[in-house]
Length: 80
Image (cartoon, rainbow, N blue to C red; front, side, top):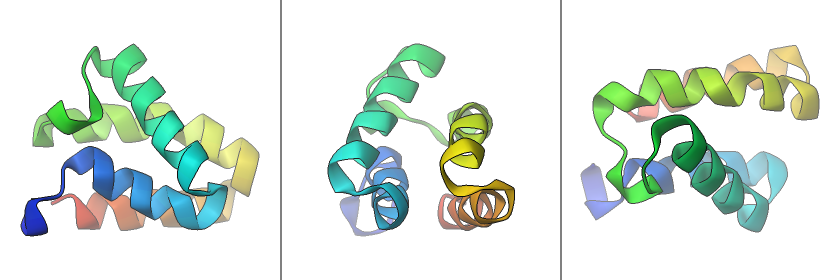
């Protein structure tokens, strides 16, 4: 990733605006472990769609459908 940041860091940074930095890091750590079976710094490009799909229900609950889809779209763009 540009700037030497991992995909997990990019996701956590984007989520931090909405759910706070500590919660965002915990969410990325938990979901990457449970969904992908890896640490956030090991997320590969091909893992991103599966991880974002897993985050969708939680984000819709916390943010509402519109804002959640906006955040996910931003993440998809940032992680290309």
